[in-house]
Image (cartoon, rainbow, N blue to C red; front, side, top):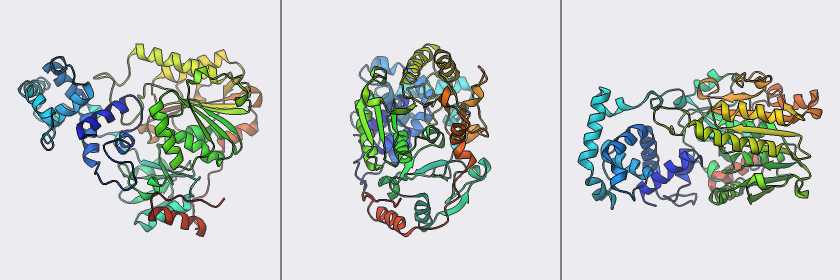
Length: 480
């Protein structure tokens, strides 16, 4: 795929919540998917990031110039990329293909509208047109979180591998301040999650041999919490109701140690195909994928008689995603109409999940900051399902649910400012009759009994990781 078309496709994917910028760039057809990639994706990544950063400016210029009205076959995301390249970038790469003559017809008008915009804003530099949300802030300080895939290796061996590459392991962090202070080639073990490594912000590991071999999963800390808090023991039957792109599914499989069964549903065939590739690379063998609307799955189907755990991470506005552009210029939240539609779907999906007869524990999560998709959905579900209540989890987590109903403090929120993660929301439901002190202790286990920082080496696992480094596609096993 040509550079500009690939950049437009990535921007559309981010807007449709198909993944982060980096994940979509490295998974795009702009380059082969083989481990050794001959085509450099850095120009694509840079073009996408800069186009998104100036999205509000570009949209204003495009609208005032009437570009989309004049060129009806030109799609909005592609127009944004092309106008960025023409006005703010380095000019068209190579010959510019068929887009250069098309944009040349509108060049004078586009440049005039950019100049008028600067006059109206009282600025002289392009960068001064950026809104506050587009300038460096808390989001740029969010560390790179890396989950060690325990289906293929162990945390100690991954740490040893990085140390041999010249990284400096600083042990287990004790606070968020430790994470904020990370610089250069230093890295830490997360203070809460025992298989989560933390690197400085902007660390790029997409070409790292352990990532390419499926030994590492690049996953934000907040996104790791749903599977951790669901905590299905090995041998369990689990439903991942809205499963793609699959990072949480692979995390569930690691917790299950590939023992048991995961029923993973999603309606998007393309996302499921990508998910199947991700799960295969991660060594997941206990998952059954289905291109099915979860709302049509019958709770009384005998296949799900043993399902006691459900992870529900439904489609949402994505307003907490670090790389998501604002849906509306000058606003950080989606329209009320869209919020109502999303919350209606989320409410139906949550109540449907709670109707599975053997269900004991459910985690509801979104990457949204909006109360309508979070506390309001949880409150209504509790009112309609009196047999369930919220489990108290991670009492020292600094960001709690909004106090809109009794018990909302048991919900968790996350944000770049308060937790150094992407924006997220989590609620853990448990069937009321099983909510005992034992189950509460299990829910709090990640906090009450953190795993010690890895110290000792294990020869067998070390050999496995070395094999992965020698050949990124090589499979490796980890001694149990």
